[in-house]
Length: 127
Image (cartoon, rainbow, N blue to C red; front, side, top):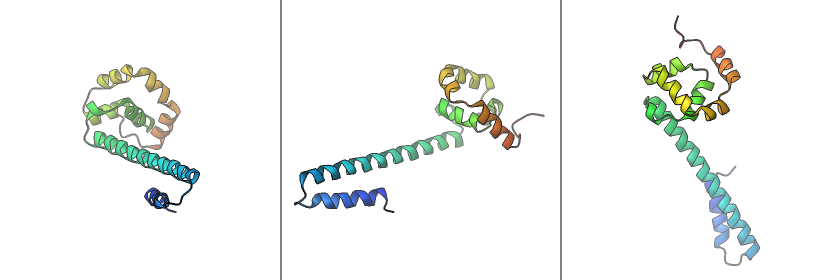
């Protein structure tokens, strides 16, 4: 299967031909625009993933978004474990959650949290 770039190059080669009828040219231009849009979306997703990984790896709480916190919680991590990892207090983390309460409760899934917490060993809980 051809990659996005290869498909774009084939379309561009077709567009360069001078004897191409107008409806076919318009159709090819629309296809090219769609492929470019898909390529841009892939790059944006990749960049977002890199930024999130960097934020978590470098323990940079100031750059953490509510969506990343929700993903960590859905992965089965407790507030205590997340706060310990970022070297902040749990009250700071709870306040952060309260600031974005509507978004937090829209995307946080208690059943996912419990399933993932049960699947993982409980290294984050204190004896």
